[in-house]
Image (tube, rainbow, N blue to C red; front, top):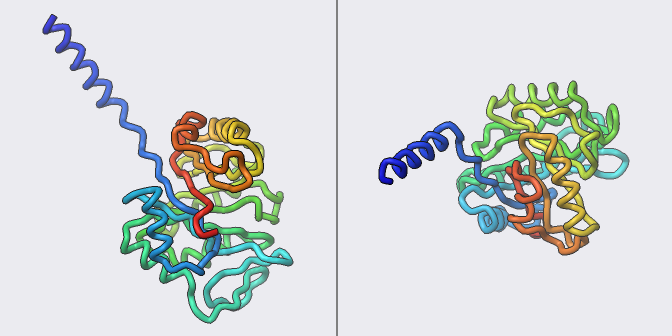
Length: 253
């Protein structure tokens, strides 16, 4: 009996050695270019839901009227990209997130601006921050080429450009539409699902279907217009076991 139990333990140890544990899901908050609250408040909110591995999805290029994209730092207008700021609103937040050990995704709402140009503008300015882990393109606001879609060619262009600043950076793509709006799966690509105004049953079904096409996925939850507003961690993981990121959208919005 003892030898059988010993053999069982050896088998378990072997299986554990060849099957690495799944990375822990990271949780955090979404900041849609809202700088009315000080950096420490956003840091506290991210750590409240995500602990020491808290993450902030920080919009650093925001869709505005007339298909323009606004950046909240001093910038001389270039094409569809403009600013009215005399000071850099983003830098104090990234400095704080660096100090607090948070992870940050720099999100872009491009409108008619060229995505590759925006990536260069943003990463030349902020790519050195240790908190930054990648760039997110919100395809709801992508109006160039095939609007609201990303092709494999665009995926490769954006990912190559992002990783020219740091080979560890990831490319995130967000929209609320189905898989036909996204490129094929690839290493260092993360697909984020953004849905609202319906029941959590429907949201989880749509998210699970989308996430099933990709290695890495994430979701935004907490919209007041959803029923109920927030999906639990367990429910999200049940819908998509490959979930790596959960963003809570209601903090300070």
